[in-house]
Image 1: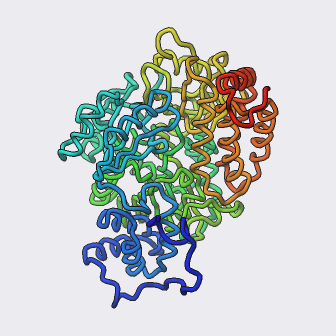
Image 2: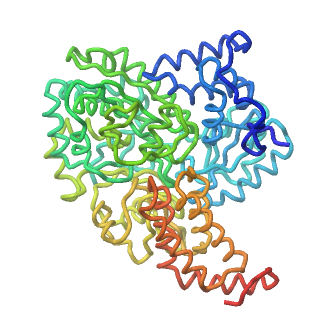
Length: 197
Length: 427
C-alpha cells in the first residue's frame, strides 16, 4: 500500500471531514523548522509564497514530505494540509514517499541520452542496488548538457560520466567524501575559448 | 572573432565576488543608468533592439513599455528556471558572474518602475542559487540593492526564490503561480502579466541572459549595441551546444553567423566519421532542421523562415547513428511527464503521441498511425493555455515530415523483428 498522500493512489475517505488548518496547541513543530519557515514567510508580500522553501525545509528535516512534515508546515503557514499536498505532488524535487537520504538524479533527457545516459542510469541503479541510503532517479534535463551524461549527486553536478565512474561515485557518497572531485561542474572552464579568464 | 560582451573574462577567478566584478567596471552601468531618467533608460533599451533570450524573442524594451505608468506596486521577475532541454547558458552566467545579472536586473527594474523583484531559479541549480544569494548579500551591503540605491531615491527589494523541479515553471504564468506558492499551472492570457501578474500586480518577466545584457547596453549605448548582429536580431547570444558534438558547451556568438560555424568551428562537429542527421536550433521544443540546413544564419528571423526557431539558443545535434524514432520518443516522453494536465489537447496529446511511438517501437504500428500522429500534433498547436503541448507538437511534427521514410522503414523493420507482437498488422 502506498504511503503517498491520500486521494492520490488511494481514494480519500469521504466519511471524514477534510483536515482543517492544524491547531498549534496540538501540533508540535520543531522550533528550528518553525523559525526557518517564518523567516521565509516574512520575505514575501503574501506569506503563501513561502510554500516551496517551507516544504523544502521540512523535507530536509523529515527526509520527505511526510504527512507529519506537511502538517507542521501547514500549522506554521496557517493553511490546510491539502493545499500543501497539492503543491508537494506537483514538483519533482519534493518527495511524496519515503526515500533514501542521498539523492542521485541522473539526467536522461535528449542530450544526455544521446551520450549514453540510459546505460549510465541503469548502472547507477544496479550499483546502488537495494541500499536504502540511495534515492536514484531518472531526471528531466538538469541544464548541464555540456557535461553529458551527468548526474546531480545531493545537488552536486558531476560529468561527463562513464560507466567506469559509477563504483567510485557510489563509494564517495557512502564514505561521505566529495563526489568525483575532478568531474565536478564547478571546476569546468567555459567552452568558449575566446572568452577565458 | 566576435565580441565577447557577456563572456569576456568569464573564467577570471573570483569574478563572482563584488571585489573582482567592481574592479572590472561592475556596477558602473548602474550608476550611469540611475543618473538618467527611467524614460531615458527605456529608450536605450528600445534602441538596442534587444530581443528576449529566454525563448519567445520578444523585444525587451517594448515589454518594459507595456507596464502601466504611475506609482502602483510593480514587480520584476527574472526567469532563471532554465529547463528547456539542451539549455545551460544561464547556469554558467549565474555561477560565474552573478553580479552581472543583479546589475542588469536593478537597471531594468528602474526603467520599469518596479519596486520588488525576484529571481526564480530552478531548484536543481543549488550551486548557482547559493552563489547568487552570496552575491546578493554583497550587493545589498554595498547599496546596489535595497533602499535608496546609490542615493538616487530608487528602491528595490530582491529575493532569490528557488523552485523545486518542474519544467512548466519556466512558462511565465506557471512561474508566477509557483512563485505565489501554488502548483505551477499556467494561467489563461489575457490578462497578460504586464497588466496582471504576480499578486495580481503589473509584472515584467525577463530571462537571465536578457537582463545580464542590460549593463552592456547602458555602457555602449543602445544604438551601438544594435550595430552588432543583424538588423532584427541585434547583439550577441549565448548558444548552448550539446549532443553529438566534440566540444559541447556555451559559446557567445554574434547573431546572424552561419549555424554551421557554431556546430563545426566552435563545437567541433559530430564525432569522426559521423555526419549531422538533424539538429534542434533552439532547445527540444524547436522543430528540427536537417543536416542539409546548416547554412541557415543563426538569428531569430532566419531560423523562423527556415521553419524552426531560435528559442533559448540551445543547439542539440543528433548524428546519423541515432534512429529518429529514439529521438522522437525521448522528446515526447519528456513533454508527457511535464504536462501539468490542465488542458486536454496537451495532456492527452502528449500521452497518445508516446503511445503511438511505442507502438512503432514494438512493431505494432500501421502506416495510418503516422498520419494520426501528425494530426494529433496539429490539434495540439494553439489549443492550450500555454505552449507546452506545442513544444512537443512542433518538433514531433517536423520529424514526421522530414523523416517520414525512416519512420515508415522503421515500422516495417520493427514489425519484421517482432512478428509475434499481438495485434500486429503487416504495413
